Length: 484
Ligand SMILES: [Cu+2]
Image (cartoon, rainbow, N blue to C red; front, side):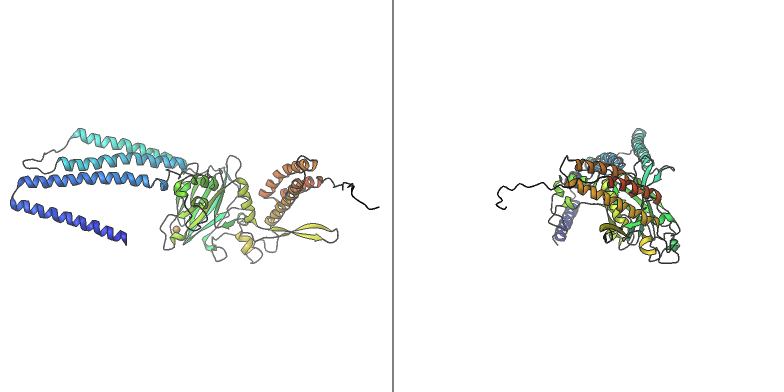
């Protein structure tokens, strides 16, 4: 309401000034007073100068005011490897356009002032001036060439696809390895697909789409079996990622602002974006915690400050329909260990402790979990189209083996935590854990049951070799005893 009243006041004031000016002008014409006409012209040219100063000052002030929310300024650093280059190009363009913007506005109003109407002043007939024309052609061409060539170079570098011999894996560790995920835009949500432990995204075909198969994954393709769908993007920091971007209906746009990642999702034409996140969500929060604009209570949770609830986000940046705003997913950049733990959770499955009544010892039984793989949660053993109908899939054995190695690890951890620091038990447990660690990682990422069984056996041998020293009850000498 206040804004409307304010705007009305400004409009009324403007109308008032214009009307007074018109009245004065008419009066001077009627009176035929040339000196007064000159005065009016001077007044108007002066108003122009006042407007110029106010306008340019407002531009600078608003720029400074919005720095906390401007990309590449203040706390909004780029959180990806290629990001600073994009920011540099934006700032370079901003630098040159600002100079042109300020100079042309000064020139515009200065000419209005200099050539205001005056009695006896005759306009200059100036058809052309070659030197001047050369100057205003050559300077912008040179500047534009630098901007365009710089932009093209950056584009070619950023959009260069991975070499053909690069391998997609679930956890890139060596040169030439990358993690490939898939984002499919749909009215109005993103289908986010991870490749599962084989690191390979399975094929899909639109005719296969149904309520059980929103992407149309082809189940005869084994690469599809372990692919899982999520509602958030979780990525390990400093690992190359390739996002396959597709759409199911209309144009969408895959946009992660802080990563400087933005590409159209086009139905029928897959696009992609390669990037490497360099700042974890946690370190971004620490950075934001130093900014006054982030040290305010969060809008949705006033027990927390705004920086504490910060998340990177994926948004749709193409106006794709009336639910467009809801195409928003969180993006979490985490350490390698946190990422692996998250992948473990997506694979599902658990071991249940059962007491074996014959030998009276605890054994662990595998219970297939609520895996997020579309195949295992919706198709496996349920339809005649299931290529694995009635069979146990390798995938489940792989998950089971991983969980079993985890149990050995947990037991050793417990033994170490119960032992005294520096004791034989402590050192033995530590040594065994160090030996099992690489096996655990291998079994986590393994795709072959035979290989996974070998690692499990090795882990079992290591764990079995470590026996805690039996506790010998120390004899107590009770001097206060009156017995006997
Ligand atoms: Cu959209």
